Image (tube, rainbow, N blue to C red; front, side):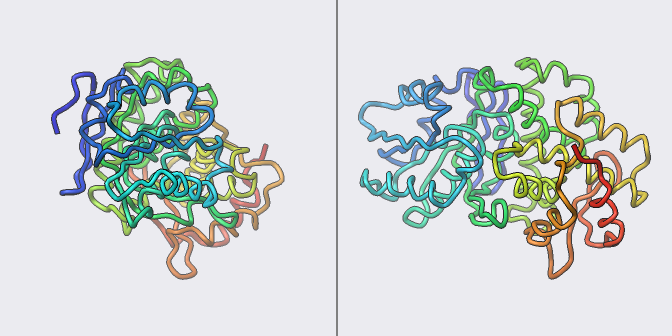
Length: 368
């Protein structure tokens, strides 16, 4: 695929005939060449939320030719709305508009919108095209890439869904200008994750550039997004449906998803829960003797420097963790599988953590 003129970077998720580009740049929302090549037909449904619609919906819609049948579906904003009921609203909008199998869904928003629009696309008439246009840092570096779609269930996060790859991912760095500081920090959790699991050199770069990233520096953001997306694209190409190495992308998520479920989806942002979860995973890795004190200190310091919590929520007990952890999708049989650090930049999936060590961590890990 020819790179866009306005794209600072163009990467490729290599999945054969289902592969697709990730365009990273500025002004992409107002560039028709960014959208038009990836439409499947004449029917387009833009799925967004009540926060993003006033900011970017008109800009995006204006890039679509008048001869197209363009409809919109505006959903409430928040992780607590990542439910099958909201996906049903997307299906209803498609049916009411008479959309067929040649339609295209455009997911304009953060990870919640991308996951729900993607699941609607995966299941509507057994599969239609969709395009990811992520507007949060977390979605730009993580959820928009790789084809994981779905919704939450009261008993577990992302327990209902499908693998369904987009036709393209369009990352407009300009959309981060309106991102609140708390959301920026939440997105940085997933960026830090890539350095911890796969690239110690990138982790060092993050340590040196965290201030610029939190200040929304466009050049620093472009580098961080591109490096994060490249690591994820490489892993997805190796293991699309998470049978093996793709599970490494869940560093901190087993603990973090338990925090989200206990606190109520949306009360802790996903990235905040992952920040605390990665801190717990790094601490457990140290207690296993896999990393040393210096590596643990670096892990905690870079997480904290992004404005993320290091402590678990006050009042959360061992069983509040273990219930969701036992339902984690990585588990095999009755064995808990955790993503842990052998060293910085080198993660592994382990089902051999002594339960006594895990229980001690869950009982005595700092709360706040």
